[in-house]
Image (cartoon, rainbow, N blue to C red; front, side, top):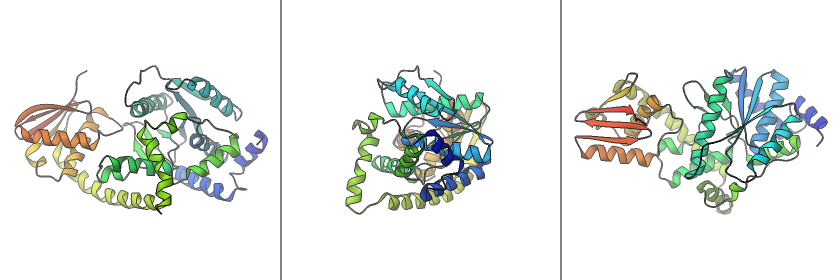
Length: 339
């Protein structure tokens, strides 16, 4: 499709495409409720992120909201730099100045996890420099179900199985906003094709060494068995509702049992030991978050191991999530681990 036709579609907010028009209205309503004057948009060049770019362009034409577009080239794939330039060219046709950051840190293990951590750090730092408090990402319905199945395979509890939230803190200054979590990938592909005519295909999406790729391959088998992603999403939403109630209850417990100063968190271990495991996990994660400001909690299995090991001894030191846990009789002290 020509740029001229694409521009008309964006200006008309996809009104000639009934289903996509509904997706745009949903996107618009979410941003209207968020009420921010500017956003950073995470771009990869895949169909999901290009659809997010298209929706933000349309929203900008209607609302005059400012968007800054950022792509992080991790340098993991051979042609990643070339692909980044291609994406820059696609966006340039719509007068978008795409900011490309090349990651200089080596990623040699837990590739997807490390890349994600680096990506959010770069996006957060850029947002702070631009005085922007919100980063938009193109996580969609399929991503949500895949995350649920990954966590299910790892034996996650209620918190993990609630999957991704629409809004999360990256840190105290920058929030992560996922406005497309209820949108199907097939619809995002349509939007990308209509506006940009093409998108980048990431070969790592077919690499079976990644758990997410193997989980993704299950979709056809689940469908054949009569299990649709829409059904799984209903379960995720029900779990998320239960988690909200639990979070409110646990929030009060955290306030009562965690004492924070500039350099440490102190927990009454005697009382801590009377709580249910889920509450203990929450208390540990919240202690780490208060000191490290991490976006992602440690895996539940690691937290559970820490809790079990602490119970075996009266006095000892443990490390987890960049923190040092010092257990001494009835007191548990948490400090930021020294490099």
